Amino acid sequence: MDATLAPSCPLHPERPADGICSRCGTFLCEGCRKWQVQRMLCLRCHKVALGEKPSPRATMALFFATAGFLGFAPGLVGLVLGYQELAAIRAGTAPGSGEGWALLARNLGWFHLTMLLIIVAGWMARS
Image (tube, rainbow, N blue to C red; front, side, top):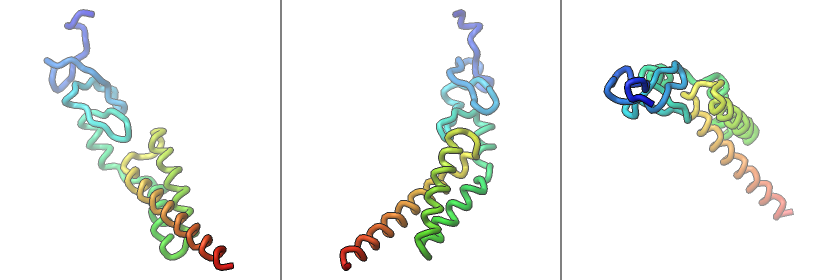
């Protein structure tokens, strides 16, 4: 292929493009690509994505996972919501900004489940 016909980066015309923004379709050189939730983004779209608010499910997942310290049931709800939010983020149907909250909710949920199992095992051992 002729090098003059190859797409180039709009910010660096001297560099060949080696990727495309998954949000807007802009050609990107290696220096201009940013990654978020396994998606290649241009600098502009990356700034926009960072400004997105987490989804309501991510917020509820973290709320329930934190409330799990008051009782185990909310923590288990947080575990399930955290997994659902992570799946939605990976599918591109939820904002990537909620990934940290969903990971925290999932991990806290596993902590609550583990503690519940330890307590139940202790009760059963005493019986």
